[in-house]
Amino acid sequence: MWEVALIYGFINSVILALTALGFSLTFGISGVSNFAYGAMYIFAGFASWLLLNKLALPFFLSAAIAVILTAGLGAAMYRFVLLRVRGLVISEVIATFGVGLIILELFRYLGFSGFEYTLPVFSDGSLLIGNTYVDYQRIWIVGVGIVLAIGLYLFTHYTKIGLAFRGIAQDEHTALSLGINSDRIAGLSVAFGSGLAAIAAILILPRGTIAVNDGYDVLINAMAVCIIGGLGSSVGVVLASFLIGYAQIMTDILSGPHWKMIISLVAILVILVVKPSGLLGKQKELEERI
Amino acid sequence: MLEISNLMVFYENAVALNDFSMTVQSGGIVAVIGSNSAGKTTLMNTLSGLIIDTKLKEQRKGGERITIYGKIVFNGEDITDLYPSERVKRGMVLCRERHPIFPESDLLENLWIAGYLRKKPEIRKAIDYVFELFPTLVRLKSRKAGFLSGGEQQMLTIGMALVVKPTLLLLDEPLLGLSPMMQTTLVDAIKKISLETGLTIVISEQFARPILPMIDHGYIIENGMMTLDGTGLELMENPEVKGAYFGV
Image (spheres, one colour):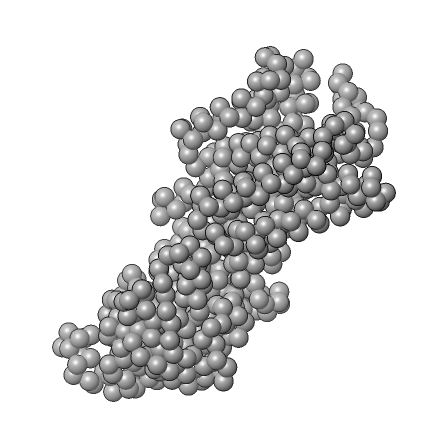
């Protein structure tokens, strides 16, 4: 049992980190809490499914197009909705949640529900680790998740756009006075975050069916991880993913799967009471010290 | 190089700048001297275009109404309505007051972020120049900028602006909150920048004493209006300036 918990806890943690990275990145840079994040995830799943099954495109091509389309949808949401309410936190939350609701419920209304809505796994078969079988799709998730996290770190620290992301995240006016167009970079960050949600969807959704309701779960999990880790902190996101990931697996094993989501919500409550800036909400703490 | 004609800025119905005109010739140091709330920061934000961004954001959320009249011409181009990032591309860079830096990034990363519009070799060259100008910063390369002292942060702020490779450098109250010794260091550095690079510099400042001796031309601003102008020497000799700024 402990071996299963250890292996699947690790995989679950990487899945959580993967789903939360985009949400954290967008918030960390533009300060926008993208409550349409779960909808972007599901949109990518259905877009890929449509391209694969209705246009008969190869899977990896349909996946790549779905990622680009989702990033485009994020950029369009920023340009036509968020730009108007930028800086008004409550309005941003309501607007993005509204966009998310429209996307998700539109899919439900159009009848996108059922077991036929699945994406193919990258490769069949499973691997024996110790005495536990792990399917190759989960190995893919872990591999791509780790590569993506490292890639994201390198991107934000060693590329011009990445450094501009970090600049805007810390002081928009200073960045602006150095020639960085804050609206453009913030729009890019929403597009980038949505693209990351799409990559997560392409990797994770083949494990089951594409269900509209998963959009809401993804949003809650991403929020839980980001709040616990410290909004905007990438290392915090990874740390919180492992905490919640293992907590969920242990809860699943000991109490049953229906308690899994409760763990995320309770964790949010506890961290908000005990340490509102999150485990590694460094920037906030630094500001408080200064 | 820079011509400001009849600039007026209103925050709602309050006048922050009142019919302000000024000319800056290429290659010199020009100062705008004024007390608190005289309109210096509004002038700098209007020149750099930051006020356009603030105005836009206030408009979006139905906040404070900011109105701007007048004309700003930079190198023959009317830039009055130009967005700040576009002004930076044209060579006009502002160091805002209270040494704004990126506190979570280390000192070196701050300089790299500042090089957003430049190519890597240009950034490296500019960073070398910044370290030559401010040798104190060399040993602080890896320190988080938020943990630097006020003076070090101000050096970094000027360094960041230099990495952008401006043709016109706007310094908004660079001496604010610094010790007299640090003020001298910064004044020397500003003089050195002007001599070595030929950069045009506009400084807004309330401490007239260290600034006036090094400027080519100065403007005294009170309640948003220009009340006096002249060379540094003329202003230092002026009895009103002596009374108001030197306590004589």
